[in-house]
Length: 148
View 1 (cartoon, rainbow, N blue to C red):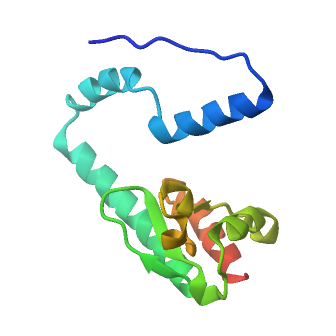
View 2 (cartoon, rainbow, N blue to C red; view 1 turned 90 degrees about the vertical axis):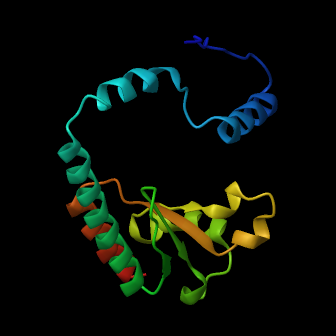
């Protein structure tokens, strides 16, 4: 296994912001610790994963239904804990502006999908929500979003 080091940078605020932004799109997390976690996970019984899958599916369904009820067009995920939703049906046209205002509007956060696209206009009205939360948190988020 190849060990990865920790790096640091001393520079102007503009340069450090550029480096942080670039790193965000190159690596999500450092992978070294996950190799140990995966080795442990491979020792778990199969029913652990069935239970986990059912739990996440239920949470996905809670949030997806809440988003639909609130007027979002929802794209059901099959292999992640993020739900992509289209805000166009709410009369919104800019995912970045929508996501910046959302916490103050209703106390919920989302990420604009366009930050992940080379051609941002292709995802201008798409945002994503995480459903790897407690069920009570998801139900509260759905209630808050319904009041938008």
